[in-house]
Length: 364
Image (tube, rainbow, N blue to C red; front, top):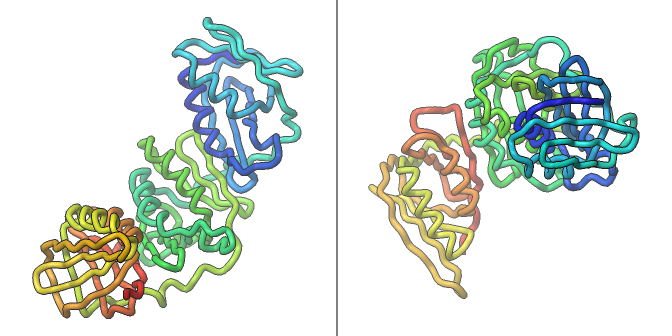
């Protein structure tokens, strides 16, 4: 293999592909990047057997070929080289990077040992704006669990709503639940509801956020695939039954609060200095946030609010509440509650497209 290209171009390609390598892999081949050069295209792929990243660009391919090298090594070399022309040559044992600064050889691994990376075939089923997709994932991902003992909760449900032409992203860790409706183009009725690892969605959203391109989606060979320009991310699906979240959605009709998002977020951050659980008191024209930890101290702060309905006091995990408040868009956050023992709903003023359901905690 002999390829010439710009350092900046291949560095961007490599740094993107590195997102598919997990620090938890035990097979040496999975620490590598698969590099293919053919037909004036350079394709770099990575996988951890759960998620795969495939990205490509045009390059001057003088001799085609394929190899696997350490992702960390080639990434560190390219990251530390200045913007210049790079020549890549592969021999039997080493991949050599040549620039005017010097030559750098990396021991090769066998490309035959690298797992097969899915290729995008045919047309997409759904298409969403990159910015809208990024926001939808940001608003739901925090509610996803990291407990591998409950794999279903480490994923996000993507389900169709054919009637409205939207898909719904839902995630929960059993302490809170986030739901976001995303407008899409395409054959919504053909979409197969599935549970996708939230890590994969985060990677697609991060990569989509740096591009103006749409995010295309499809199911292929029991995997979900996303395409953004020349980048394809594929992921296995999580098997299992997602919780029936509809029965968890409270009405939140007895007490409704509208409060400045930045003011209440700042108040919660200060309250968290004294403890992770807080008491939210709702009164005629304000809310009161208090925390108390006997061995540390206590805090008490009031924030002006528009209150409609009954006064009440309810306890929340302050960190979880802060996550919900900060993911709301707009100047105001709307909080709907029924009783101190029932979940609250956080959302955006005048919109039902985003809901953040927060379970209460018992206070002393």
